[in-house]
Length: 261
View (cartoon, rainbow, N blue to C red):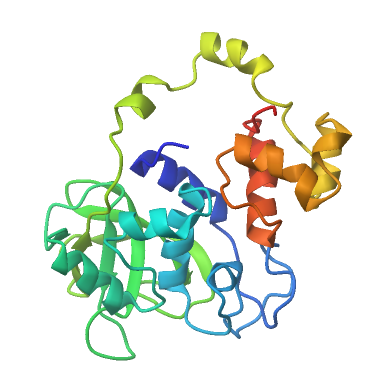
């Protein structure tokens, strides 16, 4: 997957509605085991859990965009993967990729919060109009204003003049040229039928069940070793059969974008 703002936003949109968990259970399900204890798949991807997770949600988006490659995700985030919003903000400042005005889609937005000085909350900018900025953010709620411990992934918007906005970080994306010229058309969709497995329309999140339903040969599922060929073909590097890696395969299958081995 090309490392563009458009592709990152697509990944984020699929996460809307995710609820944090009350325990380290059902982390990959959007709504099961919902609670207020800050357990999420986003934290788990970085070896922690039970902690504030708006920054880890952002890091997870880039980690996913980069095929679960942490070093590539770090590069895009100016060298840092962190659960601390202020740490991410300082990385952008150090790399001269931090701005206080004129945001654009794909930027990260940093907010004041209620816990400490500096950035307490972070979100992904998905759209900017004349007077408002639209976001997708983790650990917030649909309530009005900046909510920095709200428990879910939500789409929100703010006035550009909102006093809680500190500034914006601009990640190191690849050019959007290819993405913008390769939008699906009737021709491209038709020609892709031999490239991708059929789209999965069921409700299962179990990777082997999904692969079987969409017609993947049995030699490519049933074990981590077998699935590795599929993973590599779909830019999931260093495949070890983790929950987040398997969920990535399932998500691609649901989009009809899982490439054939």
